[in-house]
Image 1 (cartoon, rainbow, N blue to C red):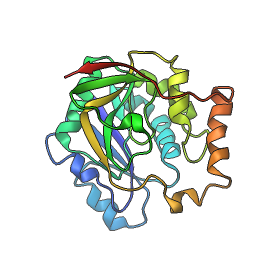
Image 2: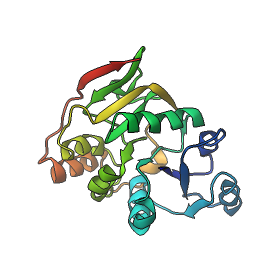
Image 3: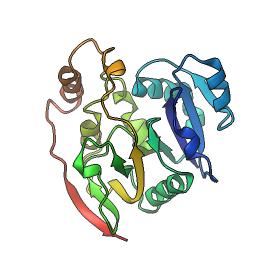
Length: 229
């Protein structure tokens, strides 16, 4: 069984994720203030909950409060609400992850991108890497249980995508970018409204994650092996 958990604002693109025939359930953590919009989201899923805060703080709180229910799912995807992708591709994402027994992965990224390693490679099914971005990671249940304690180490979540592979032991065949599935990031990655709520610099915020979990070490992005289509 598969699950999507996503914080969702007033302009969330989650409705595109379920226009087809999803092989997953979906939880929306509504962080807006319009009760009518929140009510309208129940057309897409019965699991809509009001929540305020930073993305990974909200996810950690929901996971810990609903751990028995979440534990029935094999894979859980955590996309930003400005990611555009259709149902068929999300279904394929779960399928590829399961077929290759991945611990942590994401679709390749089009649109606004911050890291070249996440851009798609043609004629590739997937690339094993040491990096999956915090924007939209897919985790198996065991990985979620191992990593959830890190979700609120800082405000921005910057740095977590370097911490997670380290905590998983930097395996060379369990973390991947799925090139055969693409998502579009529809907005620039830096949100002035969001980051204005952080009480210190983004550099300091990022370092909080590395100092706590990697003794201050950061790691260059590596592609280990590519599996062709």
